Length: 260
Length: 113
Image (cartoon, rainbow over all chains, first blue to last red; front, side, top):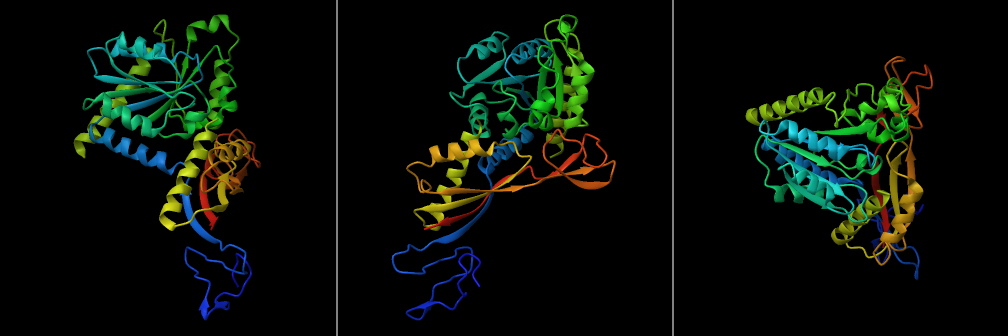
């Protein structure tokens, strides 16, 4: 029996022809005046198109030995200051490029440009996240150097960017001590998707009631192996540990490209 | 708010299928969404209604099948069901479970004319 409508499979004929074709397309025609309907199997991830671009980006980055990081956080966590200071510390040591994502303005790109680094601003308009298609275009325009570092600053938003693979090697989530320490629980998807957590603005700890141990415990409830580095992008504390992490990633990515 | 993007992605998949499989009207869209997937179902319904206007899916009913969240507890050596990412193991109350299922979102099939 047909599970869609309950009619006997192959038993109904019109002018001697069966009306059912039980393959992927399931035709129905039961009575005059009722339009025929059929089932079409799809079985695709809703984000399959984004993921296709992400895989293509990842393949290109991998071929060129480029280590790429997707920096995600809520607005105001200090992502752009972190980027500026990271670029200043890496100047002359490592080639890099930056993709800036914001809904409006190129203010952040201007701050990056002032450091001398190659930068491209993506304005998402009403969009709340960067997607892999945008990054695909941005990568073409940036003309990335082999064995370089690509830093992508996502739109300030702790929810939506969690879903969108850009083809990056790692998502790095930034939490600042001026926020609530329970953000890893409130925005669990992002902390689960991340491979590194930077706890920023630690120079302000004496002035705020932020429990560092509790924040890290909450992050580890969601992602037990998530490494955490405590930093202050403004006074430089912890920045060397962050740069070591970046350098290790760059070296591994270069080595993979050479071996491929 | 990324549900707007998800709704647009769903419509794109439907329109590709309409082109390949020759249909002009979608009556029902079946989605399978894990309880642990990063999506708000009511928001997705709202945006799908907006983006599908004037398309092959403008009449379509959205049927969402919810898959339970699944996780592995190292402590209990057991597969457990999980309602949210920040829940502990229902047996031993330990955190840090490994998610094993119910975090995906798929478009399964369409009823079309």
